[in-house]
Amino acid sequence: MKAKIRDTEIYFDIDGCGLIRHNSEYFMILY
Image 1 (spheres, rainbow, N blue to C red):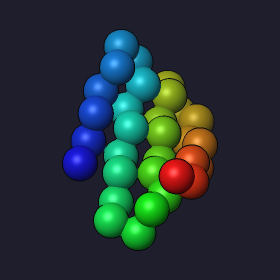
Image 2: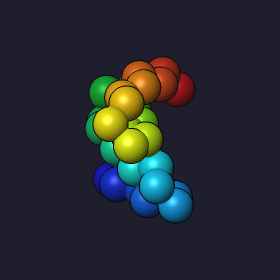
Image 3: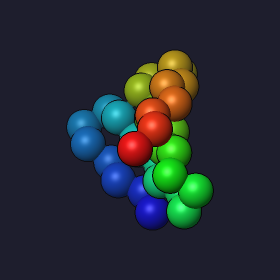
Image 4: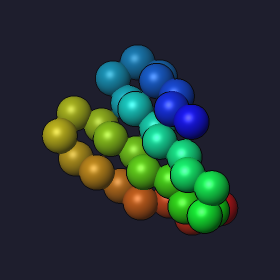
């Protein structure tokens, strides 16, 4: 699943962690 909010792209996978891409920076999120 992919969500796009303004300049930020958020990718979710099934394993319970996500990846946020803002400009050229990547951030890992756990949920």
